[in-house]
Length: 451
Image 1 (cartoon, rainbow, N blue to C red):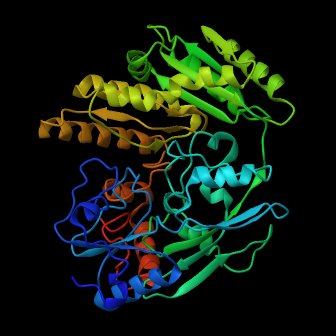
Image 2 (image 1 turned 90 degrees about the vertical axis):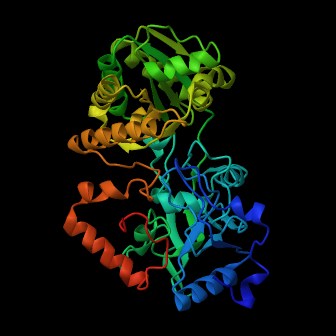
């Protein structure tokens, strides 16, 4: 494949540098033998790439920080990787309208910092906030730790600028607080994983900054007691800003890294935070009472931000603990909150039956777990067993009225299960929408509904 002269000065020719754009963080991602990389500098570059791609039938993979876990941004053989990581401007931040206009390469953490400087808050907070991009967040409708109170990316996107296959530039949505003119095309693009168009600008809603959070940590001797606590906290009029759950496998992994004070016979840990302006102290005290009433064996409550950080340290060490434990892939499923601990139990039963070690932790407040499946990287059969175990967990998740992905996206790794969740008729309609925006099928082919 040859790029036109107009794109050559934006392309990557060094083989070692090009290789860094080949894969994302998904398990089993393999670099193709031939592909091109174009690093966009502005809107015109994106238009040029998609104009060329449409004319030549060349597949295009939009790419941000390459931190995705579902295989949605892996380079395709003979295709173009279109990197948007260089589009990093926050072009507008309006404290009166409480909005910001940002390019897709802006880091989530940088948008948070810019909003905070104006006394505002951008709530979506993936664990990868320090390095994931707003464009990637929009592509997967990312969530994070604070979804229990604040929701996901889609709740904060008011409008988009999008380049379609062939180079046409469109705008969707609005900048105003209200607006019901026409269909919600913005909502259609959020979560579409680069299969309908390439987002080049995002209008986001901001909210007033909360107070510094206070945190409580509770240990439980049983999953049923932890479930009762989650339900009680979900029924709160003033909902927690964070409600995380660690199962026993995760607790052991964290304790193996350092002593965070978790007891060895602990079945579950819940970590809860409050950030309501002017009421954090009373709210966290009330949450602690609910945790005790549900049957917590021990509850620790922070008096200040420093103590809150200490109570959160074990949760923050989870990723490091799982990495230290061994090779694994991390997944993303979501069920109704009242069935969360039932899903955890099912995961443990699958682990016992298959011999695949599985940790079952995640965002307890919204039913979104990130189970990790451990395998021997030197044994292909071991990895296959882990993947089959995840397939079993997917079946259980769907039987509970859940979804195959809460925030990581479908990508290529979960496309096989999409028909099971949405049904054949819905899938055909989604493919028809894809064809409307991308008639030649050049945008991220092989991902989501094109399995």
